[in-house]
Image 1 (tube, rainbow, N blue to C red):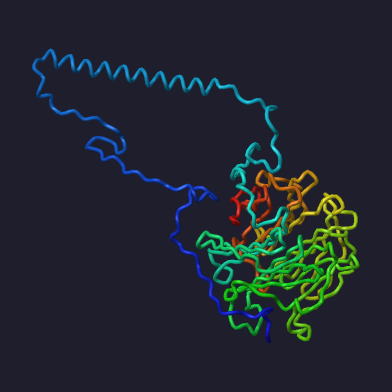
Image 2: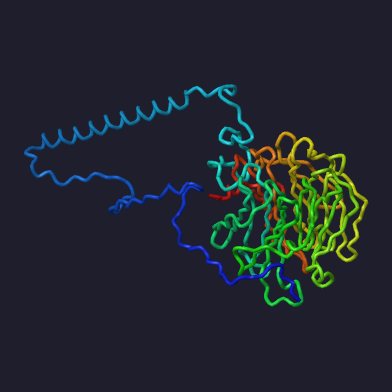
Length: 467
């Protein structure tokens, strides 16, 4: 049974060199390290200190002259000490007495002006973004997925992020934690400008006829005719290629968002309803393995969408969408029956409806801290003040939040948000194997943030190098 979604080529990935030039400041390769030899110390001295040495005075003619010379040295040393001490005192007083700038003087900090913002993050400070990269459009769509090496149990992992430039070309970048480096995949295909992106992945061995255990990454997007298109990568086909869904005629609403968690894709159809596309090569071989149907839910036009497992082994999938009232709602899809639990419920807060601003939203799942057989669900969304908020469900008491964190400060108004959910297809996600990272734009740059192990704070990891 051919389960692969695209033909593979024979190019092999070339791993980046480990011995690279040291970069002292991220995104500033012009900063280099200059080393200086340490002064050699004589016995009883400390390396690096400066000493003056005097040999025996054979030309001194009398004890009186010798005494005066010693006095002169001491006088000069005393004068020099007084001068240095006075200078240091003046500098210190100048610093202490310098008038602080008024809180009302100058321009106020804006969401993208991080250099002037007050930062109180305990895990890390919020860095100022570098100059805006040219390879990513302002308010670009974003998508991300990740996997661990060695069959999901390795200490090293890879992250793939996809975005779009201002000419409509899709771009990718791949992070390898073993080399601590990013590798670009430039201009790999053309898409509708501003298309939603959905990125997911699977291991070949989830299918019985698999010949290897390679990772396959699947990207879904819209073309200019609003057709669902596919691009995929694996360890051999590192440049990627078009997938088999391109042979179908799945058409979405022109304002549709996309979300995917293998083997499921959700979108908004031309009638305004929530629609799903499912891959099952065994049951639907006559259509290339692709099946689609309506979920019979009318949703807001251009509604935010999210799709994540809410139970291990994807026995249940949480489908998040924006209802007609603008509030975020959830239904759960059963893996075995394919049925939706239509007892929908709304969260405590509304996210901005599309009529006000493009709704920016991301959902992800993590193993529960105390009971790894359970999954916790998190959602991030941006409110009308451009503040990214988080809500979460980590026990039976229901949803908590919303709450924001300093690591989210400075997010561009209208930025897309993308977060990582690991695989839990045919086996539970092991404890400690999560990669709880999210991505959004700040000052046009792509910021990377990470949820800490206690799940009570976020750290800024930096900005993804794009140019």
